Image (cartoon, rainbow, N blue to C red; front, side, top):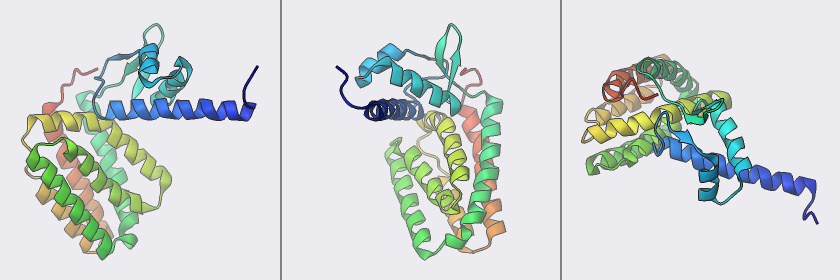
Amino acid sequence: MMVGSGAQLFEISATAEEEAYRHLHSALRLGRYRAGDRLIPEDIAAEIGMSRMPVREAFRRLAADGLVVIRPNRGCIVAGLTLDEIYETFEIRSVLEGLAVRLAMPHIDAEVIAELERLLDRMERAGISGSSDWVARHHEFHATIYGLSGRPKLMKQIAALHVAIEPYLRIWFDYVEKPLSAREEHSSLIEALRTGDAAFAETAMQKHILGTAPMLAEFASPDRR
């Protein structure tokens, strides 16, 4: 006897797929899986406590995000970035986040500036303590700015780029006591936002992002695929 209507069963399936997707999305961001690792649906399903089907559907969503690659006879493989792709990701980020800053400027007020300063303080405390929470606080700082752009598609694209690069940021953080110049660079961004000059703030964001790429690439292997 089938329990529940077709709509209810679909909703349960969709909920399981979302759970699997969020579980894997978080694991990939945190670097739990390394580039080139094969994701075994049976193992992941058992870990989460569900059937394989929602996990396989989650694989398809992650592939659309560019986080995994589904290959014939090899299954689902964690995607990686070559050195050139790391630079390209930062180049794209610089353009998109620069645009987001320009669009966000009408919404930047004293309250937003104060929140960014609080986030910067949290980022610095995480860096001093040696906590990898610095990466999360760094993302929160940037997300606060581009989230004010009012452009959902733009925000989604930027967020996807942050996810792709986050494992490499965590590797970078593991190799340094803390990003020593982070406080000064992000303080400069806040000052650029404080001016109210959209073009100046856009350029400041672009320079900030492009300046990070060489430092990160120094600690990222080009053979991580």
